[in-house]
Image (cartoon, rainbow, N blue to C red; front, side, top):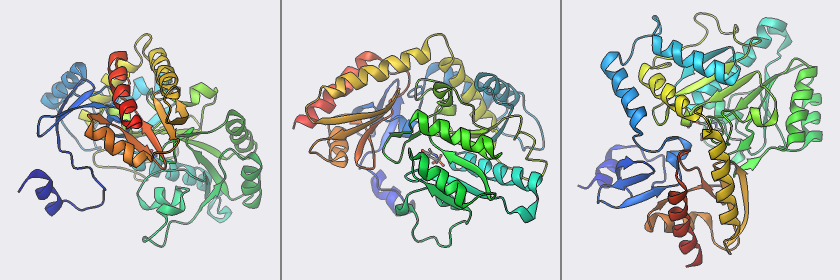
Length: 393
Ligand SMILES: Cc1ncc(COP(=O)(O)O)c(C=O)c1O
């Protein structure tokens, strides 16, 4: 039995997978079991932020594994303290809750938002609605699926968690309508600055400003889901910095620890005291290996000039891609890139890229690229040459 047969016999079939078994990786390339090498324009899905097996990152995780790999959250660890302090300082947040995934970070944000209103306005106020945006994606757990504003996800698993209503993205009037219809009942508005799974759709500055204005007027919390956009992906450590806003809560995951499981819910002064002992927890949350990986990622991402380079490389991608005959349009920010094709389907192109040694992604009908943040220009050129060839076939 080969690996794929064995896998399919024993692993639940909840993913549509390509017939590719990845065995190892180095830099921005992965190698399959049968020895073929692939340039990586996907980073997992925006997760291997420093590529594969980055030297300093490996060193940090190995050193931590030799020291202590886990302890319960009954105790403290220095590495979690160091990581939290560094992340708070760099992002301007007050305190962090650590979990293990984007969904878990968002679950935490949802709980903080609801308890904030419960504590302040009382149970009878029923101030528990969270407004999310149409076309959003917030995760696969029951609450985050319920928060997700795409009907295609709202199947099979009824009943969904109540208390989520959608407003149209980039439609200020619709946002105001939804808030007015639910006046006095809304505890938070939750959004992605760039809707990743929704097809790399950026929120407009005016719309973001309207969210903050409306929420500010009514003590409604702002929650930025930066699970995909955060940790340098868009050219800023967190995308809110690009817009000059500071949400009450920001969630991070994916690239935060460079490829080991992590989720983080960042809270400001207003929200950092909401969760009290016993109200939330996670066995693996704040895992020392993940925190060591996260510290290493932050060291690199915050190093002099690194984020400027992400912006420059993003623009380099944009210019090159726009010159391809088959490319209709390019969306996104930094190294979060969505490509609308003129005639070909993204799914077919993604598969053809794979056959030609390039790992790429799709998001809805678009081709999506989330290359490692430290990709070199030479690697970008090589990957784009494959993509161009495939597009011209
Ligand atoms: C914006 C956003 N939020 C939440 C999630 C869920 O993250 P996870 O798969 O780590 O639970 C994702 C994953 O794609 C995401 O892109």
